Length: 529
Ligand code: G4P
Image (cartoon, rainbow, N blue to C red; front, side):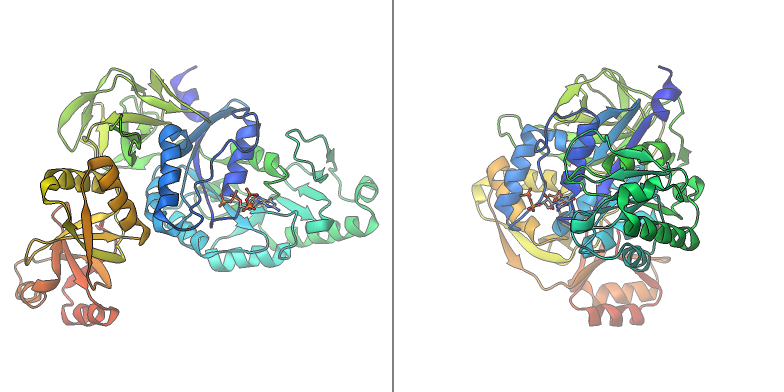
């Protein structure tokens, strides 16, 4: 197949949702369609149920064995689909944000009864800012939930989206009769079975067709006609360009558990979702069809098996072909690296591959060369933008609890920070190390992993910080800035890249500081123009 056809047939996306909305169940059903797995239950949930570190460790251990859960790839109808895993737990939101830099589109799963939930709001906001094309899947239609129109309203209000349904439910819960596919103009009847094939699709190209009454009964048929009239009156026609620009979000309804409405979603998805998109580097925009290879690291996965310590760096290919045993430039280190066993991911396994294409993810074995955000190229000096660190919200001093192991501790901390587990800051005043995280769970994770992977012990000490923000100013020599540095000396630190960070001990003091020093900018994300 030609290079350009390989690129055109790829769809790389993430599924985002609040925990429990049905992301795992939906993923599994999509894989069943791709023939990638044979039975339900094969996809491991990445859910942290009790919110405990041990739970997280268990998940990570399982993943270490089957790292494939981070990227699930399968073929469907001539399309190569790559699903990137996005943890739903809020303490791992940063991991999800970073993964969203590597997707070309997103499916948002909403629970019909619970409606729009907190994590969905946050994740969709990130997608909206990045203008990522989004499809909404309203799940659990086999249960009683909110009225479809009310829910569409809620999605528009709370998520700031402009929706247009491409399918519409006929009843719900006990009364779920089926789904009308507005796009293909047919009815899919709900039987409550979880079969893979859909035998019950009936073509109804004209809504006044009496067949509709025979299928649904007079009351439901009339109600559907009324509702579809309303849909057509309220919502705009689907327009692919608008969807691709992030201005319009098509909606599908269904039940992942019953494998109902999932095929409509998948067929709709492969028809409209974008193939790999161009990406901005600091230097220029890079297009997928360019000859020269380039890609960036968006995730680093530790190998939890102590016998094989190396890590796996996940590289999203942006342009050109990635070939095995070929020297590529690691731009940050300024050196060439060759990879003899790059992994490609499939539903349940990873395999060494010779060639990968834009849109694909390759896993590279790494002994400490990579950090999140690193760029690899065929030789060009490119730096991909857009893997920011978010302002952490939990802070603790980290101390060495075993003086004999200080080297191991330093190495462990270094590597965990490269993986993006947390952020390390060094106080300007006394050089003490502070760990900042987005969720409290990470402290336990760090402690556990330092002990189990690096044989090092750490202890924590509380530190009263409300928020850390990155400091920027037009004039680093100004009187104002010198005054700020003197007055706030106790609250200043450097991050790993040497950028200056201000630790505000309360919302009030942050506000006062901002007012007092108008020439200084305080950023809540590490990457700013
Ligand atoms: P998540 O990955 O988004 O966190 O959600 P997951 O798929 O694990 O689904 C959460 C729960 O919702 C599961 O039940 C799952 O079976 C259920 N579920 C998913 N889709 C549907 C649906 O279409 N209809 C109904 N009625 N339920 C659905 P659980 O009891 O928490 O777990 P399990 O023990 O059944 O696996």
